Image (cartoon, rainbow, N blue to C red; front, side):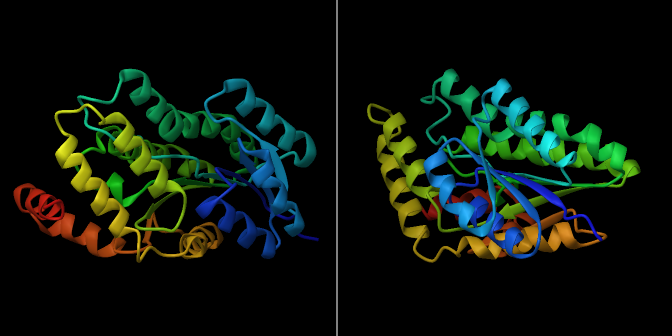
Length: 272
């Protein structure tokens, strides 16, 4: 009898995390869905998903969550670091407190969970660590400096980690979503406007906020990314990076092909 693989997914109350939790549960994984909002998580129980309240900025919450799974299952085979948000605003306007929180949620929480699950993965000589980055980990737009910093850093962390843990039979997979229907865009625009109410950048911010709102109209359903995640964790030799969602591949390709000057010109043209 084959033991079911155990997956821990953070930020699982909505969007990509929720869609991934349901998809994996439907494919015979033992799924632990973690998020701060327990009320949002409880509806996942109808798919046989186990829910864990977890604040990724709280060390005790992270440790307790992982230990709870180890006690029940004795192993975590798949870690999907999905929790994150966009703390937008100009580099000048965003407070250092808010900047540090952005990095805490999008980068350091993922790194800490990786530290917590790796000993068991190494002992079992198997593991899949999936870090949900963004096409914003490949290029940067105005007013997203701290968000992009967190995703660029997550990409670098993942590349280093991949080469460290490969010897133990552990794969590190980066997923770079483009436009996906979720709460992300609304929260991002809200943060952007809030940080820029009395800003010297307000006129540009207003234009960029309108661009963000308009760009969400054709966003992909979260299941598109969930399927990419499952493709990666079920592959014996997964790709290092999976790109998907609205406009994702086109944007990443443009960044590869265009010079810095040409790419900046293209980005700024969208804000006119």
